[in-house]
Length: 418
Ligand code: UD1
Image (cartoon, rainbow, N blue to C red; front, side, top):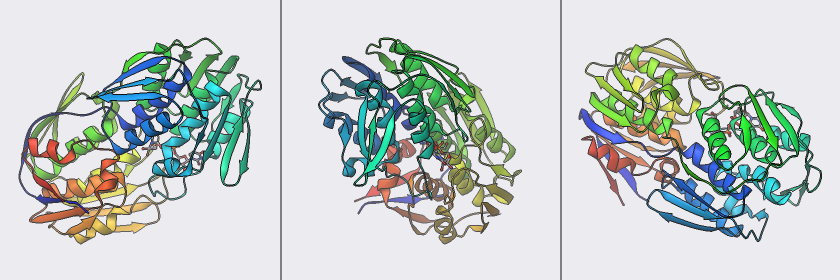
C-alpha cells in the first residue's frame, strides 16, 4: 500500500488553483438524470468519489465520458433504477440518487449507503422528506425501495436539522412534483446554491438556496445543461492550513473567500495575514500560530465540520491553547490519536477537544482515518520536524486531486512511495 513521505519544516510559496467542489459535483452529476439528453459539467475534479458516481450513472444506462476536467453525461436511455450494494458502499453521498431516480423514473431501489466513518449517519430526514412528497418507501432484503409514480405532489417540508444531503435529495425529487414545494429549515451551504444554479440552468424553477427557505415549482419540463462547478472550499482551506502550519506565503485561486469566512477568521486570529479578491486568497504566516477562541463546528455559515481536523492539525504545532467543539458528527476526532503520535497535546472529552500547541510537532508513521482526518495529518506533517509517513491514502483520494503534486508545486517535500 502506498503512503506519503513528507519532510516537514519547509516554508511554502507560490500559487495553486483548487479543483471543483467534491460536495457540489456529486449532487450535480446525479441531477443530470433529471432530463434525457446530454449535459456537460466542467471543473469536475478527478476523485475516487467522482469516479464512483460516474460508475453509478453508467450502470443506470447513461453514457458518461471524461475529458480533462469536463464530464459529459447522456441520460437519454436509462435502463435501470437500482444501485447494487458494492457501488452504494463506496460513498455515503450515493443516497442522492434516491431523489434523482424518483424524479426521473418515479422509482428507485438502493441499499443503505456507505462512506466515511463519522459515527452514525442516519438518512431518516432524507426518507421523511421524500415520503412527505408522496413517495412510498419500504425495506426489502436490505434494500430501500421507493415508489412515487403518480403519487408525488409538491408541499411544505420542514427539516428538523439543516441536513445538506436531505436538502439536496428533496430539491431533486421536488423538481418532478407537480405544484409548489417549500423546504423550511434547509441547509444553506454554498454547494446547495451551486446545485440550485445547475437546476436553474436545466430550466427548473428553484429559488431561495443560501437561505433556510427554498421554493421549487415542480413539474416544469427540464432540459440538459452545461455548467461549471464551483471551487472546493474545503480543499482551499486545507492548502491554506498547510501554509499556516509550514509558514511562508501562498495563494489559492478558484474559490470565493465568501464561502470560507469562518475558516479565514480563525486563521487570521491565529496570526496569519490574509489578502482576498473575488476568487483568490493569499495567506502569509511567519511566526508560530497562536491559540484562538473556541472553534465550534456548525451548519453554514458557521465553522465547517469538514475543516475541523485540518485547522486542529495546524494549531497543534503552534503555540497556545484552543478548544474545539464538534457539533455535527459524533465520531470526528479519530485523527487525534494519529496527531498524538506526532507529539500533539490534545485532550478529548465528549464533543470537546482541547488543543495545547507544543511549538513544533515531530515526524512519525501515521494512518489516515477518514478523508479530512487524512488531509489533516498531511497539514501537520508540513509543519513538523523530520519525516512523516502518512498511510491509507485511499481516504485522501476521495477528496483531493493531485494532493502531493500541488503541495510540491508550493515547495513542499512530499512524495508518494508506492
Ligand atoms: C455533507 C457533506 C459532508 C459534510 C456534511 C456537514 C456531501 C457529499 N457531504 O454530508 O462533507 O461534513 O454535509 O456539513 O455534501 N442527519 C440526520 N438524519 C439525516 C441526515 C443527517 O440525523 O437523515 C444528521 C447527521 O447525522 C449529522 C447532521 O445531520 O449529524 C448533518 O448531516 P448532513 O448535513 O446531512 O451531512 P451530509 O449531507 O451527509
